[in-house]
Image 1 (cartoon, rainbow, N blue to C red):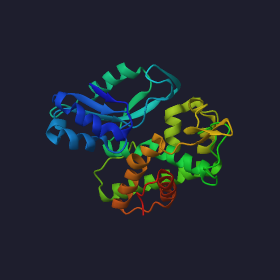
Image 2 (cartoon, one colour):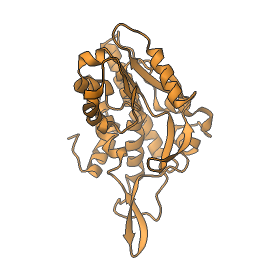
Image 3 (tube, rainbow, N blue to C red):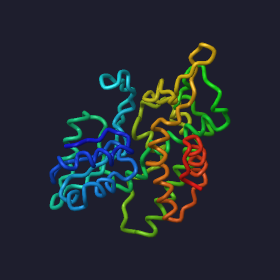
Image 4 (cartoon, rainbow, N blue to C red):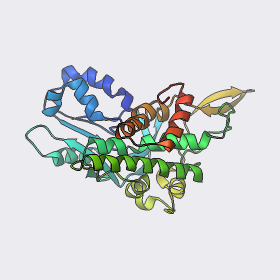
Length: 293
């Protein structure tokens, strides 16, 4: 079994590096499988190889966690209660539950690994692609990002009501993609694609102190306590200050491999996404890229 617990922009590099050493029948997947891991695997390993292997992807990581000492120690702030997983079992079998059992042995009893409908549902449900760019946009939208902070600001606990509403509206746009796709393709199944508010409740349950709205859930979720915006240290008059790190994976992964992918699917489906566009346009400016014109 091969598990990629890596930023999605590294998936192709690792698939190419491992290709010579993999044999058909292997179980290989990613957590999370952001940006269409199945398509990346087929492109790099070949459709015939993937057809005779088990390909899987988790919609998100099993935990909210952070590195304390690189390569040695992490702090698990919260374990999610449920996580969607899609397994494409090798040709001639339907035993995707066997893969799930192996994954449970690796990650533990929790989270419960719920079967997703397909890789498209996992791609569109990827929470990081909505959470990280939108919360960053909401926090910095009216700030001068060249003015340093005395200390790293809180990420989830620092979100305001506007950000909570923006997250909800972007999730509404994703659900509109779902509605249009199901209308065009009635045989398509996207039952596992939910609003982000439902995702929060399913993932963290009673770890959330106030379930009134997305805004209150972000600010009272035990799994998010203490997590800060990605920052870089700068020296100002002999004192250590902090500026936003727009080269962090919240931007370098969750924009091109996440929200941009969703935006592309929306365009193919003919769905307007003004709220998603607001976030993309701001994030790509901070990143120095141009995805949306």
